[in-house]
Image 1 (tube, one colour):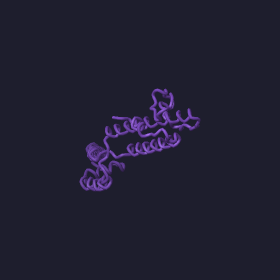
Image 2 (cartoon, helix red, strand yellow; image 1 turned 180 degrees about the vertical axis):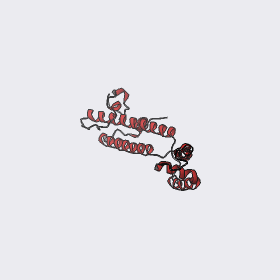
Image 3 (tube, helix red, strand yellow; image 1 turned 60 degrees about the vertical axis):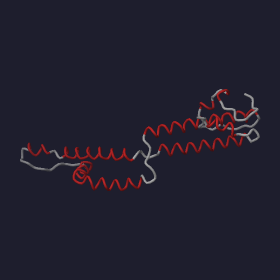
Image 4 (cartoon, one colour; image 1 turned 180 degrees about the horizontal axis):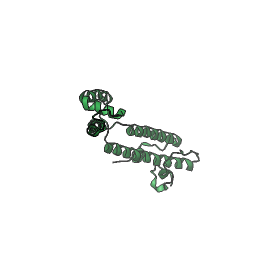
Length: 185
């Protein structure tokens, strides 16, 4: 599979303005950075949410039953008296214990609305997509550094971006793609 830098080598014409090429590469980098942000914010798969809800409902219900302190009824020296001191989370657990299906159905309706546009990304899928975008961003930055150095050789001063990847900025000339034919390295 060709990297972005390999693809762009054939697309860049030597007669084009190097400064314009740097701007085009920077625009591409910003687009990739936006894509990266979107992937980072992507929802997890609906099946994972459903499994987490079932697991968490079970835990809430179990904690609520434990908080009732039923054993206290049997050993109260003043006779049986039921007066547990429940926290809101434990009350929610009792509600889940007694009304699990309607609560799950209400949550499912809201989740259905959230997932109308897609099913989400698993952690593995998200990591793979982020890795691919990171590599493409590096390829673009290497191409940009190559263009900046070519511009410098031709007398143009182009400021490097402060957030530029050090691997690109510090790369040896031989590691950079040649974007323009006839440029010396």
